Length: 399
Image 1 (tube, one colour):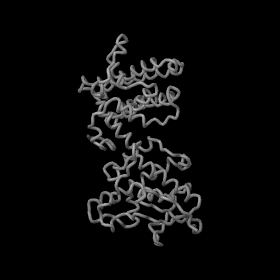
Image 2 (cartoon, rainbow, N blue to C red; image 1 turned 180 degrees about the vertical axis):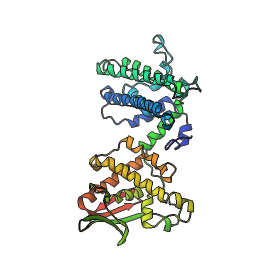
Image 3 (spheres, one colour; image 1 turned 90 degrees about the vertical axis):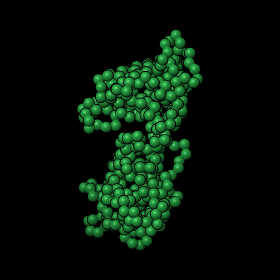
Image 4 (cartoon, rainbow, N blue to C red; image 1 turned 120 degrees about the horizontal axis):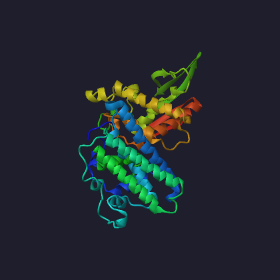
């Protein structure tokens, strides 16, 4: 499957035929709402409204930027497919039942079976293969979809849903029909989009967390990252200049670091992030360069995976996340990162070995790295232990 970063991962999951009920069950894992049943309906409704708004915004951007804007083709289900499933789950509604009612009128509303319309392909068998997401018809279809969602929100606001689940069912049916129509008009394969969405969900919220194998396992020990890295990070002041040095085995590593910014923000301690990437992802071109452990036995790996561009990519990710964290008290008290931030990472690492790491693993590396960073800010010096075997990074005060 061709496409931008993240789209090529897990081809087998994309090719697998996913039933509507399987999709609904998997999508429930994205539900972070503590309230159950119809009491918690407001939260996913806001999400659905926001996701349709994202579609409208993307459509506007597509019209404005013409050929320069890519990625809209996949957005239709990625943005609100799982949210609609969660809304259906809130009211104990089956997505497969809703799919059957797409083709029924009020008089045969309840004449639904248990086997028919089991997949997205079943409701798109007559798909127009000459459609386009650039057509005026698609714009009209998306606006119609937004209108259906608006009607649902209005009835929710007017408290017409709380005591009548059939009202919610009717609204979801209208939204489902509008979704299918928009996909048909644009020649978007909902089955393929749903399968990609499941891949995304597994990457972010897996049933069982399994770490990606260390990328240098097959190399000689002399070219491997040390399985335990003990780094002393020490702030020093000489005259008016404040900087940080790193020591490993009593040897100064790399150059002394400053914030490289007019306003101090303690970015001089940011090697904690690189050590976290090494420990939890098994990847850090920066640490490889500092410890002179490039994989020179394989020149292509040495040049591509351990070279200057890979180092710049890692530094870019660190800077991007740091700027977001700076506005959020460096992620203190935050246990889960916003998906909009995490989904940027595959854009950076596309084509590099670390693209194999799922988003939950990136989230752990980022949050654990910032936990150590906050302690370095507090104590101004300390020993950081990156354990690649345990996939952990810890801090100890340095006396």
